[in-house]
Image (cartoon, rainbow, N blue to C red; front, side, top):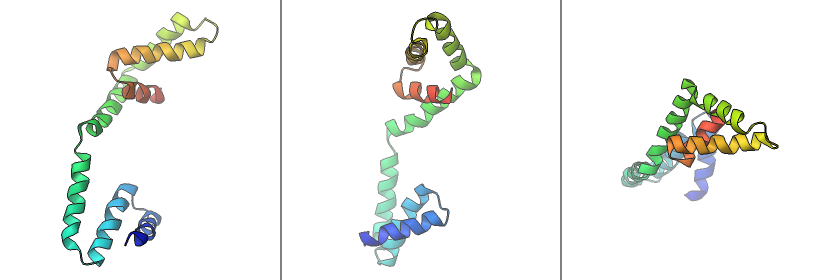
Length: 121
């Protein structure tokens, strides 16, 4: 059955189905075709329990925090502040990068939010 998963998954992708739904639909369809309907409920229950994780739920909130900081102008002000402090030094761009990251870390308390907020800038 595992050898049929990849072709079915690729067909779903070529039809334009998002990857998340293709990863759910392909094994569900194969289990239904094999007559294992009771295992379909186990599949979707395991998917839900896998997603019900506190660290995974924190990722969208850190992205939201980065977007809010970007839209409010905090990120631009922090970068400009860092530029004013250390931008004149040799290798100033690298210094501005490090200082901005330190300031983002102080504001958000998380390295993941720092990376996300810096990628948006």
